[in-house]
Amino acid sequence: MAVIFVNRFFYPDHSATSQMLSDLAFALAQKEETVTVITSRLRYDDPAVHLPDSETVRNVTVKRVWTSRFGRHNLVGRVFDYATFYISAAWAVFHLAQNGDIVISKTDPPMLGVLTGAIARARGAKTANWLQDIFPEVAEAVGMGDGRLSGALFSALRKLRDRSLRNSDATIAIGERMAALVKRCGVAKGKVRVIPNWADCDSVVPVSPSENRLRASWGFANAFVVGYSGNLGRTHEIETLLNAIGHLEAKRENHPTPIRWLFIGGGAQFDTLKSECAARGLSSVSFQPYQPRERLALSLSVADVHLVSLRPELEGLIVPSKFYGVAAAGRAAIFIGDADGEVARLIAEEHCGLTVAQGDGAALAQAIETLAADPVLCRALGESGRRAAEKRFALSTAVISWQDLLAALREKSL
Figure 1 (cartoon, rainbow, N blue to C red):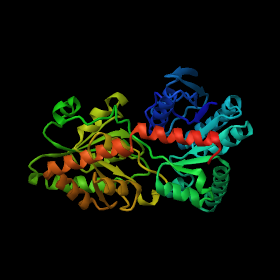
Figure 2: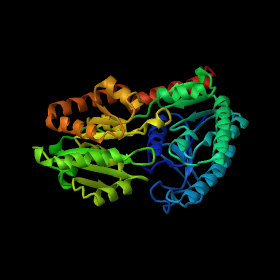
Figure 3: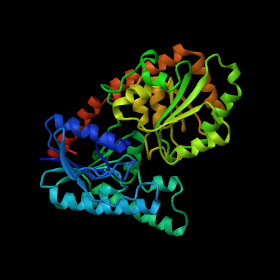
């Protein structure tokens, strides 16, 4: 009996959903599961790349289906990319899924499991939804669509999604607040599992400043570095960052150690932040593109403290997965958002960082100054994060949870 994952991106793509799926698929294949991944031929950051139609990677069978390739920078084109993937992925599920298989649909594109799940059940397969976000609530929260027509559309999509979740054999939420929301959608409690995202604690390890060649080559050898790594998109807010940068630059003469900012990645807000920093004359900020995964331990370890953010209205709809990499790298975290949010709770439970409210740039600047002035505290918070990663958020821990889930699905004990 095969495990079939469906998601628009997979290895060697570096996007967050791809990395999580790739980690899990390879780990399960190593545990002698028969694993197939239905995905696109695209890469998140370069739609012009054409990946092989079919191949076997580390004992995982990869079926890459045709889609249009307009890319994520064109909204209409993105919708068309989504639509073509829905159709092609559904066709692949119809041909590949067999009685007793388990088809697990992720949420890129949104509500993928509505179509693939229905087809899989018709083929006699078990179905599960692996939620990385909750749509259409995320779209509403970031202001996509306005007016009576979009409201009616979102309402119809919610009903369709809820029915699909109720009909599935399992739903995997990546946080407790997300799980609570799923249950409010009418999904039976016994069908909901919480399996947080993770970091690969074997490959992402703390690297000391003196041994980090990237820190020196990027010009941060003698600075206290505030980092942000990953997607900076519509679910994040940048004015708090800009205000904090301005606060600290205005007081730079008071800092014995220079405070520098490093943003690594991309996303809808990444270029906006870069432009705003230039427009405001903020000179302590550097930008780097996404780094290859094999350099992740080095790139995450460049910073002394990392920022993680989420707009408060998105709590329960998304859990920022970058937190787990920060913890694995042994770096303190500052969460910008809801003090009762998923990441804020984890930081408080594990004593691995600080939380400040969105919009309070002065508080963010103060938190950074506190850690810059107390390197012992900053290192202690990072060490606590690493312990938490090893104990709660390691890939090996997640794989055990997934194996338990697959066993339960096969035994029909959910």
